[in-house]
Amino acid sequence: MTSRKNPLEWHILQTSRERFQHLFLEYPIVNTDCFRIVQARLCNGLDLLFKTIAPVPIMLIKSPESSIYFTFLQNILLSIQERTTDKVKILYGGRYEIIEHTVGWYPAKTIQDNFATYGGVHQADWIEHDNLFGCVRLYKNKVFLSPGLVHHANGGCLILSLRALLAQPLMWFRLKTILTRKQYEWYSNDPSQPLPLDIPPMPMSFRLLLMGEREILEDFKNLDFELTRISLYSEFEDTIILSDDIAFMNWKMWVQSVANALECPPADYNFWSELIHEGTRWTGDQGCLPLNLDWISYHLQEARLYSKDGLMNGDNLRKAIRTRAWREGSIAEKILNNIEQEQIQIDTKGEVIGQINALSVIEFPGHPCVYGTPVRISCTVHTGDGEFIDVERKVDLGGSIHSKGLMIMQSWLMSTLKLEQNMPFSASLVFEQSYSEIDGDSSSLAALCALISALALKPINQQIAVTGSIDQLGSVQSIGGINEKIEGFFQICNQRTLDGHQGVIIPSTNIRHLALHQDVMQAIKNGTFYVWAISNVDEALLILTGIPWDNEAEPSLLSFIKERITKITLQDTRRRIGSLRWFNWIRSI
Image (cartoon, rainbow, N blue to C red; front, side, top):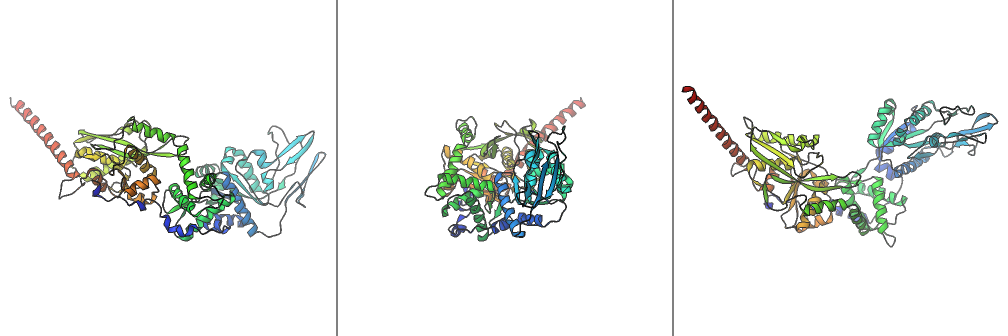
């Protein structure tokens, strides 16, 4: 049966690292142009921020809100500031003098003045009111003025976390007032108490950058739509497309800049090969590598822990990744043990009518990983009025996307059968042993195959698992979590013994997303496990049943279904005719 369609060759199931092999030994020269190339859109926005004459110079940046991003952006802005401003430093701010009960304000003359600054770039990923705006302190009947971040950033740039600002919205409205009026006014720490002295305001202006994830940016837009509309906007790009050798060298230079900032030891040439493999797993695309600073720093620091002799190599990174998988893998082991002890029933041998192994991913709250595991879908068919029962939806365990996928599946089947009346069968589809909500349409192909198997009374090979969604024309579409799904089924087959007939059916459009673990790759290379890529329903059915979907020259699944429908229709017609004759006989008495 597996010979009906050739499986994928092992070498296309991961990124071709050999194409960059000649670049591994070249040590990149890290410079500030790396940022301008890799993050060109963001760099353009930052340049505009320094040049803008807008009354409120503010920029929103879509970015993770981790400290490494704030520090990184601060260093970039400092380099831009040095490049675009005059060498002569300009003093901003000034000096407050408190003499008895009078407070005076004077423009800055030297940097030693208590509220004088050269501007610069300042950042904070969390802020409190006094930390941001400064405060008035009273000690032994003496008044002291403490500067905040806005005072230090006067004449320069201030980088803040949007999440921190939105957690305390009143801080944002005071900060907005300072930006729009270009003046800082003092307020009492206690709203119910006035200031102990009249303190004159001070002129203040700075460029503000607010960083946050997309949901936080949306919340900020809802809070202050008008200002959001006139703000500059850009994003930290998370990936780089490997279009050519230059793109790879830019990525390597980017990683090296992070390594230098973390003071990591030099990387051996084979280190880059392993990092590329992990990077494509993270991006989910063989043609992309990650630029995410958190991801890069995490892998560099883990590899560093296992490095010796002042050099990081591929073995260090592999050991770090294996150890992490073991450390975080207790849930995966429990799932596998439950399947082996038949607490969760998954067949990987034989053939069964109306039953199929669909592939899914499971996310556990609070856990950093997702796990792939097969789910047994069963379908039963009986004489009826064409009703299709999705048990998961019926008991409110099926999400809206799941229901959409199954409705599309039904639509394709009914349009393909071309019936002039309702189908004389009813069907019931269930995801066996599922006790939580199921969502997503990646099981719609598997569900359709189970339904066709039940209608045609032809068994499905249980050694093969299936993933993919379908459209109304029968084409198979890409799904997510492809690597985890394949690896989840492989682990079960491997534990039970690979017999050279097991494998997984995936959408052909998912080939570029493959970056499988080494043990799976080795099994595929040895011919003991297979991956088939298909583009339509017909191809999947042929692999699963060994019977074509539609073929005029030989028996097909479609012909079996039509024959069964015709037989039931004829029986029903005879039954109605028989009833009518009986009725007519009674009337004639």
